[in-house]
Image (cartoon, rainbow, N blue to C red; front, side, top):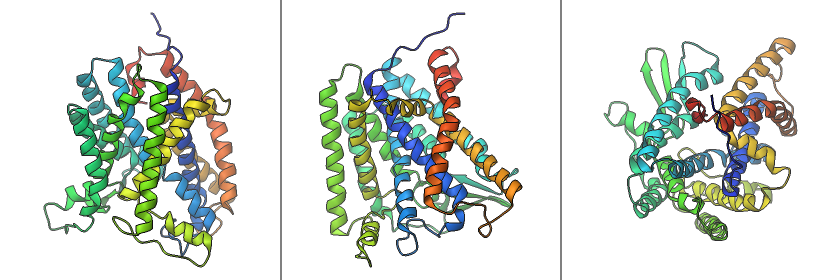
Length: 386
């Protein structure tokens, strides 16, 4: 049997994997916080009046994860089409992988969070919304690129106009609207509830913009032009964020001067993720595009190479770290018992960072093995779903 060998990836692809690897580590940091710092948890870790600065900014880093994962999913879909037979293959792959992710969220991912079966609550979170966004993009890829850009901008910039639209449980629109734009609870059956944590509509706009950015990363695209576009678009999005935030207007709760400069800064950057507001998207995607441009220059630096490895096997890492975290938590409780109130946990955010670094190092060999397997065994079709 002939085994296909993956050639050295181009610099533009390494930069994508490096960015994906970085936000994977930010995600790990946030999930370690959710696992081992729950006794310090507040109703909302972004509540400026009730949250310590270290916890607030720790959570703020995690804001980069979901929008950049979704944007890069769209971008990667375009690059998938470059290697295959165009939009029809892209559409089929998006539809199948989207369904796969939806099923994964309902099963292995939800079990990793709860360790309950049968489920009493199903949390429909980021894997669910990436899956549904991919299914939506499977239909949208047939549109011309200008239409994709226009649609993405209209959705991302305009969905906050719908913030005041709500439907009661008696309405036929209650369920679809809860999935599309209202974060809420749905009763699936007796004793089983769904939590639509990630309303879908704005994420469709983000994945569409990611796909529309694909030609910047095409194999024949000029690298200097690509970096210029990444820098100018990223800086433009951050400038738009600053202007709109200073105006204290559209699509966001207002910021206010606090008791200290740090609290004022916290209030300024306290933007809405559920669903992601226009300002949230400008801040996170603007930062992500600047990082993409930077990683193209930094790709040969030694500290970037582990990020590329993490970014080459994102779904494998996602499932692996969830189960490892749950097992570590249950083991800690079994050995030392509950402390810090109802939860076993750390004393500080610094301990969360140290534990996250240790866990990243612990998981790295397994992730590297799987990334190399994916690159080496192109004959195993299911590997591409991870």
